[in-house]
Amino acid sequence: MSTAQEKPPLVLASRSESRKAMLDAAGVPYEARPAAIDERAIERDLADAAPEDIAEALSVAKAAAIAREDAAALVLGSDSLVTVEGRRFDKPRSREEAREHLGFFSGRMMELHSAAVIVRGEGCLWAHSDCAHLLVRDLSDDFIDLYVEVEWPAISHTVGCFRIEAMGVQLFERIEGDQFTVLGMPLLPVLGALRDQGVLQA
Image (cartoon, rainbow, N blue to C red):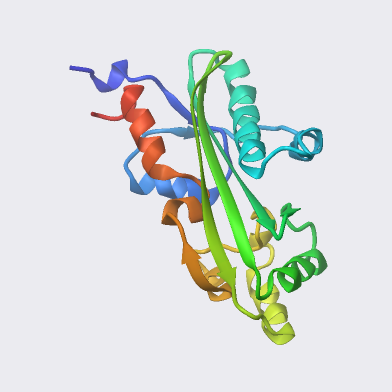
């Protein structure tokens, strides 16, 4: 039987509070080390790729950056990407940009692609992506102003301008898809992969 000392170390290559909260709640032992990568450059290089492929590529880039520094570590990378009517949205850089994004989202279906990968050394051992569909209700200008006032700067770190576990839930009329995917990481497949890798007890 494996002991705790024999289990490979797990590093989460992310600063996302929601991803850390998911792993904490699930009882996963890990260390968080945010990866410094140029996400926008990767997205530009993959401008014609499918959203799920871009989310996976960003996840790999994050994990690989940490794996290069620590070849022995098992590194979990994850990323999310939002599209609305074929237009891809990055994290808002200002309150005004957040308002613009929310105005565009109003009354439309949002596709949220969340990917996760596990990397060790130079090899990607596992990858998975999932998509959730979130119908944004008709948002009034007054609500958007109030929402940005309350939620900024927290939503500056999120694609889609929302934290579903906070006031962001008020943006939506209907959500179709896995709750963990909406939170930013397909947790159940991740947990299965961590069991396969010996991080968690099978």
